[in-house]
Length: 627
Image 1 (cartoon, rainbow, N blue to C red):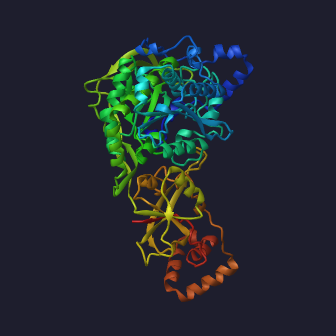
Image 2 (image 1 turned 120 degrees about the horizontal axis):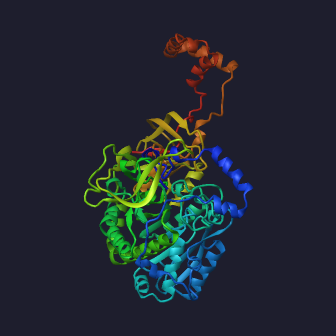
Image 3 (image 1 turned 90 degrees about the vertical axis):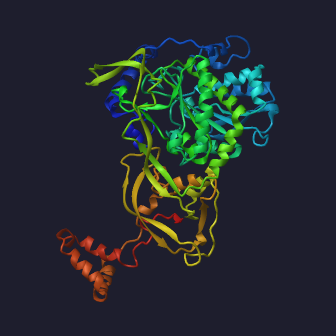
């Protein structure tokens, strides 16, 4: 989905600009019309007209099977539809029954109880965790309407089962894991009207899961059973390469298969980023081009009304798969097939992509393993928790080879009352198209040696464990007098979001910090001297936009649960005024402020704040840092 530069600044990947979001009143009217129409009327009248297409034919069309026992469900409908949940599971079992190299297992359940399937392909059915070969994990349907990866994987696995020599040779060198549908509940909320701006399938599923949560915003907080199942697989199998397969919308352009990863200019895994740039990207682009597809970069227009203003090269935060992969040193590529290209074309391109990725992993996997190990050993002193876009664009990216766009014009529109972009379905190349990279450090922090978390923060601790972050017992009985000093943050100012986002009222804060002496008997320790140390920092430093703090996991610190009664506080205040000249002077100074002087509650609170009865944990961030 598309995003504006302001959306990127807020780390809300692919949010529609306000100018193209329909008002609630429009939806209400449309719903009333839809309910009054027959099914035939709805299909004829309410299917959104999409821009015209460029003609396409490619070598990858030879991959399609049209007859015999091994037609995939999507091929059987000429890619009009994708198989439903039960049909998908049956076809996966058919593949497993046909080859001992294919295993099928359930790796978890959605909230509805539907099981999430994992298909494993390895030579001889050996265990990918122990056979010493690099592993590719291909995940489809995290947004279940974007289901291209499932049907492409089924075609590829079918070809393996039926004896494709190239695939057989590849699987002698690498392992393949496939999650055909991650968002199994959203997958079954399917229909013609799931995705207005996408060409097929006609029964596309819904973006969010059964609890209306977007799984592709859950990679840090791990609220959903679906994402916890994925994290179990990543921790268990340690894949050398992870493909997260989507479909993107927004601007029209010639590219049918776009993809991206965090660039080396803003990466916590620079060796992996260099491998992706120097080895992976060239191989995949060549394979896609040879098959008749047009591979392109994962970019987003900075102005939905004027594409020529430029594109944004996004740096993903860890709430997304490629952002998390960068932090945990799991090479992760976000594939975004273009929604305006036909489902058939997108599926074929995805097949070519997966096969090309397997080939690169087979040929250059040793270099990738070396890069992973190098990044896992990094222990930087500082860490960037958020990036923002450069104000000055790079004009060199498309100085020699143009961006392959689509021509458009702007026309006055009586519906919106303003000019709207109309894509014309004609190729248009853009030389010197401005590129705005997310390469400016917006939030940079010092990486502590360790974090100390109170044992009662069981939700936070359980989520850290789900990520695979090592947690140990604290140095029991030690305090600041006997060990390295600890630092605690206090919230000086904070602001809650006005509306919920992904089931949370997010909160941002400003902090002061000071050294503290704490008995650590009731704490656990998270050392940053571990491969996932940078991920731990992103989750536990409250200044990070994807920290547990900002996701609202510590909102209890914003509430006070003990109070003062005037009959006890007034005599205490009189005693303080009699014996503490400093407090007396501060109080008399405050009385010069008429608003304070006229407010009895404020006057009483002045003394309560300074009394030993005041809640000493109020606004104190409970996670301690050791620098």
